Length: 248
Image (cartoon, rainbow, N blue to C red):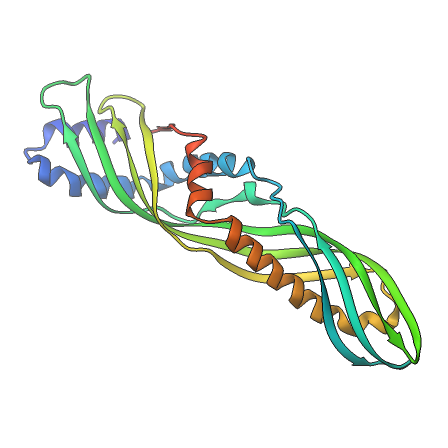
């Protein structure tokens, strides 16, 4: 059965009340996520492209600790900078689950169709985000001041954003699509998993301090992301590309 036929059957053929139609629409929506989700993910990717790359504005100086090397015992200080985060436009919703919905019917008027709203839960996920890093390491090695510059790259494995969203729009029972013109984020969380740093150009005396540098930069990235990416940030990106027509 084609989707538009199923929707028209739901809205006009079933002998149910408007209160009963909401749960039925929820079931229908959840059965169509294979059709709906790829289209919404294109929409989400377009929204996040407006902030790809994302300026993190990270720089600092950090004492990385003391290290016993073959040449000397050295206390290392790093001055570093982190470039823009690249890859947010690859963001996708992992799934769509409509928890509940309402459907406002227009009886006996086939042209007007119905207005719907519902609560969905989902998680926006983006993986393999890249940053460039650069800086200088310095210290005192057996009474001799030494320093070296470095460049490198970091990879954030995954950013997850669990969401609860109110969606709404208009459903034409006989049309090939429905219009989604409400996408309001009700709850938002930010989770970051995994970070790998690779650096080049450092003298052997500084190699043992790379792990501490990675931990420092990872913490700075976490702090920057928590400041920048919040519910308002996500909502603003979505609002800029609304409304969305979902083909059925």
